[in-house]
Length: 592
Image 1 (tube, helix red, strand yellow):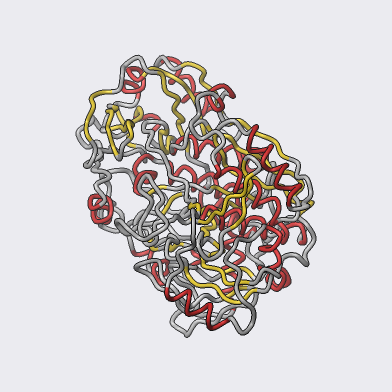
Image 2 (cartoon, rainbow, N blue to C red):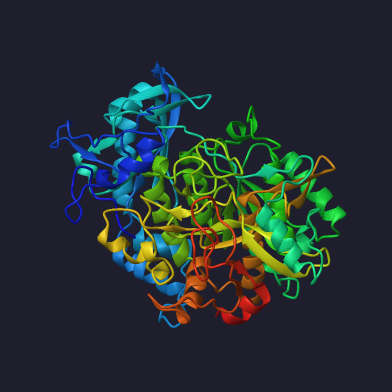
């Protein structure tokens, strides 16, 4: 994992800001500073930069007495060794392959020392913070304080904005820490509350099918008329060649949700009965005090959570257990805390998040580098994390998902995380009996190249941008890695809510769908497969070399038609569908 250099420092002779301006400023999202005006003898920079919303209306300072929770994220120890072992654990042929560690073993070797975390906790308490707690992995030190205390402690300033129809706040000065913590503190989370969007599109009324898809329907009709009326999870499992595999009864999964899950679990039980599916064991894991999560939460009962739970468990045939990591808000800090809890608990070996935002925001607020660090530890523990690539086509999701291309080119976080398996969207042509015919790139499917996120070296053969990333100060991560059904018009999925069927699309479908397929494969391999994206690219790299005509590895459907408005589906890897979609039964025989 490449570390973000200290702000104001150069990396290979160039400042990070040199690569940031185009997408960030054109989108009207942020301007930023590096805290150069602060005394370098007393303060040290963190990865939490200053953020100003250029298209937002300033409403004034955040109320001084308002209470906020922050997370001070510390750096891991021995980062080079951690990276080597994390990659090797999922790489067939490596001496470290499938040598996964427990959370306690990871903490013993790579966590900050207890003296470091104790020093940070003591500093926060003396600065006036309350409820100071150190997480078991010793990466997050959580605490609560008034805005006045937070601004003083981190030498920052919080300002309220009206942006895209919402009231929110951002830190307009970078978060600094006392110089004695300069080599230990990575980022400070919780100084902004920009919400993520949910990449979900519901079909209302008659389907609107593009000319290209119409042409393909006519082309494949001799094989069997594609079904556009909607698919159940069981039909999709058959279409993606997974129904012949055992159900994922040895494998536990997780999804990130928000709000009171009572109705979501009730809807899951109804869907299981309607689809004659196994009854999945489900538990809610609160990532904040329960009252903060369930009361007055606008996301309670959102169709997104019905989709995530029904799709992931039923595509898998069943799971050993599904854990719902329940967050209070959809801001970066809460999402990062949920991902950290997923890793430090290791109750599940696979997780999925169907949410996202323009990745400039987590780059600026420090969530990007913090979760990369966390998921690197998860990789060493044999965990995979999947995320939706977004529903704005080539553009990053700015507050809302639209289902069509539009906006400034960019990728969605957390999908573009170094250790995340990013899942894009397709228009699926298949029959109601479960016969796969063809897939096209879905017009709304997110994809492109991140300006901020570092790619894993396992992607460099497939992705030219990743191959050149080592020569850039930042960025180069290509998205997506793989793809699956997401088109609400051509191939919606049937989701049950309040005993009524909804016809749903978006990459909110594709992420839990692929996680469910992966869970079946994990059960077949006794949970020894590790990080999905490393396994996928390992197979791609085995039959390809840089600069040669691409060859699709066995176990994937190569998608060569369609566009997301800027990028086109091509033979081999592309920025609309990645390597392709999974032919799970064949793929299961190829992975080790």
